Each structure stands twice: as C-alpha cells, then as structure tokens.
Length: 146
Image 1 (cartoon, rainbow, N blue to C red):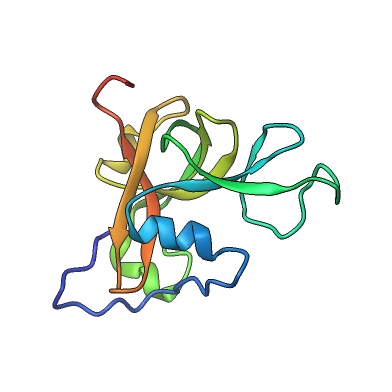
Image 2 (cartoon, rainbow, N blue to C red):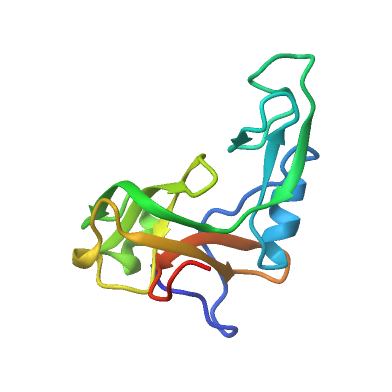
C-alpha cells in the first residue's frame, strides 16, 4: 500500500467516524492506538461499539494500548480488491492479534509482501491520509518490545 504524498489527493475509501468510533479515530490522528476495555472483565475489544459484548450492565472505557502484536492471518492481494487499490498491488491484508488480545484487520506496510508470515511481530503504523484522517496500519517490528 503506497502512502499518499502531500501533492497526491487521497482517493480511497475513508472512515466516517460517529460518536461511538470517534475516540478511536481521534487517537489515531494523534498517532496513538486507543481501544475500548470492559470494566466488568478487563478485556480489550475492537471494533468500537456502544454496548459491551459482556452485557448491558458493563461499561466500556477507552485506553491507550501498545500497538504491538503479531500477524495472526493474512493474504497477499495480487489483484486489486477494488479499483482504487490497483496502484498498490501487491499488498497485504492481515488480521493482527494485539498484545492486549483483540484482533484488528489492517494492511501490513513497509516491507515486501512476500516476507510477511503468520507470527511476524508488528507494530502500529499511522498513515496520515488527509488532514482529518489517519489510518491505522501495521509494519514489521524490528526493535525489541519494551
């Protein structure tokens, strides 16, 4: 996946934050990964939601997380999955298991797609695509976890 340059307008689909997802997207714009956490169970969850999967009596709070994890599963798109992505092929679509437990779907960037493998340690990479929107992707982690 190529990163946009300031001179190149971003023409791919963009998220449409709503009151439930806005804390996630606001944190991403600040290059932080922020997830919801159940007060009842202590479990982190992703995707953002208005009601906890652990019961209506649970409260979900927002917390910063490490952004570290590993590739849980992936595929290499050698044909664009939509016309807007034709210039990016080949690119990796992955499910990343975060150290905190949840899974996130994202692209793996910053490496040859053929070097990605299940178990590859990754870290969040924040891609500023417009002044208002930053996407959360992942890149191989080369430094040891802190």
